[in-house]
Length: 178
Image (cartoon, rainbow, N blue to C red; front, side, top):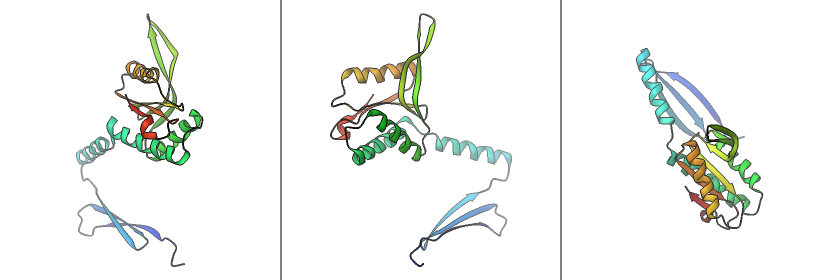
């Protein structure tokens, strides 16, 4: 039917030997063109890979913005009052959909007098091995909850953590950057 979305992708090679590969995507009468230049030498390929890695390496602040956006969206859709585990599972899912590496219930070991305890603590969510999330679903998060996140940051050496309290009426009131 004429109303159905049509999407097709073509790979074209420039005919002048310029080594450029062009990908054209057609979707609902809109055309997007993405050009990819194929490097000629090993060095050019290596440089391109290194640039690509640097571009995909996100800062804690960039990750934090995505986390806050996902948390607010989740709270708007579900509202307050559910179990912490529900928010944890769904937030982890949203963050993964956003392209982030997410681990749930991450063990944070503690060392005391030369003895290492793996059972010390568990972070609810760790994102991209850079940001710790501690989730709550209580009427009001207290100072002890923020101290918990600070302790996790000290033990892991990570720089950024968030205390996300989904129990607040407005999610913006339940977000603490630590």
